[in-house]
Image (cartoon, rainbow, N blue to C red):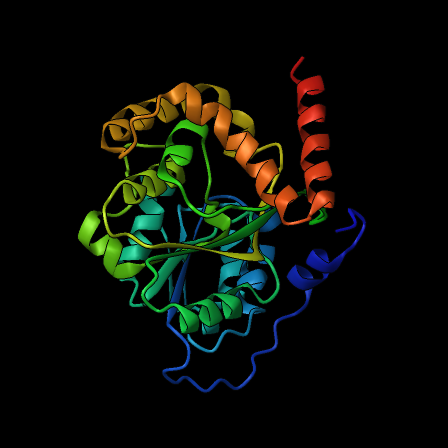
Length: 301
């Protein structure tokens, strides 16, 4: 993917024109929740990345925390195509997402933050994945890292899910590209509202150690994570994020069905990623990942 290709920018700025939709049993009902607070600069692009999917069985909620920056005007612009929205003081991002999940009636639920986006055809490809494997509990795809202007900085391709890699090495599933069966959350709990940063890491770890939860990776780019100065990943990742990550790891580590030590999994996870794609002949992606790692080492000293 060329870093100068404007395909994402075009998709998330294209004016929405509703098309007639026929809802039938062919497509699962997908609920998307967008939590937002004073993100007017990016919010409309997030909304358009959902609505421009033209998915025939969509339920979309926006849960705003009482924005004062023009966000409400943007939300009202798209109100006819929303299942619901609210703007009121809340306890933060996780509380907002859970508010939406409690209102959800979809077969599968997802949350897309108000500065992140869905990639073109993401939702229809979730539906196609369900058609082939309707017993799956968690569908997840690949993810782009994008800049403030919606250009791709980095590709992140996921692998078949291994709980120990998730817990010891970090995110193996990206929330920007993840849909969870709603019944699973009903049975095992919504997002952990005691967390500010690693809510996605926690829910994936929690479901990952449960017996019988079926994860399926689909080799397709479904979402985009935006790097921007005000994002939590830019402001609290090295403080709150590190502390919460450790807490979640210690909580779920005892439930792993593996006798291998943490040191093994921390070394194995990055090797597995490169080996997985190298064995499939995707050497361009292997080179891409190695260049990213080299750049990160230089940046981090």
